Length: 119
Figure 1 (cartoon, rainbow, N blue to C red):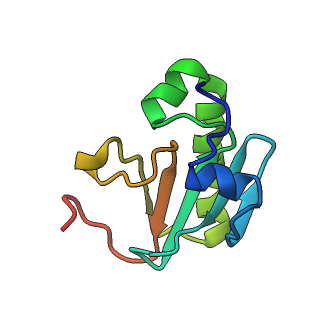
Figure 2 (cartoon, rainbow, N blue to C red; figure 1 turned 90 degrees about the vertical axis):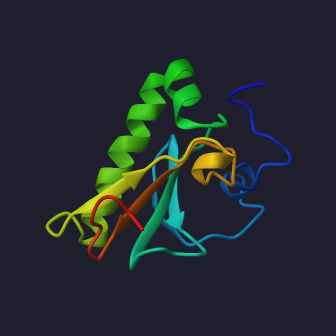
């Protein structure tokens, strides 16, 4: 059921404390932790504590929580000191876009040049 923790979801297990992570920020509805394979000097994942497979389904079902994810991402960027130099928020949706964990999450990337388009 959408919103409910999924037994086979890596991020649900992180939320429950079953898998360790380097938590950098937490609210009642979100958890932010360092990416284990960083693509920039600052690379933090911000997830909702409820399970939805992607950002669009989260926003459709629980828009307030989607807003909480964005707010937390901004707080993480400030905490990490990348607001002044700029940062990127990325929501990958679907395997073709690079999503590997199907639990909605934002990547907060910063600390180096992030010209567009990437690559």
